[in-house]
Image 1 (cartoon, rainbow, N blue to C red):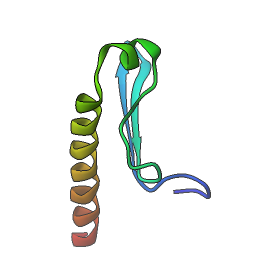
Image 2: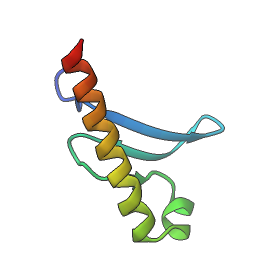
Image 3: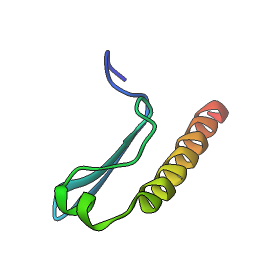
Length: 66
């Protein structure tokens, strides 16, 4: 990645609008829209964070193989 960019990013979209984001710098999956924040509890975001961290690790391991 370029300077200042995280090595890993996940972004969730609905109709082309970003609604959630995870990156390797913050290491948290977070809502990008107020309605997401208002309608989903911390348990949901914790679960999404665990999934994203796992995806990040799998991606890193895959690149190591290449």
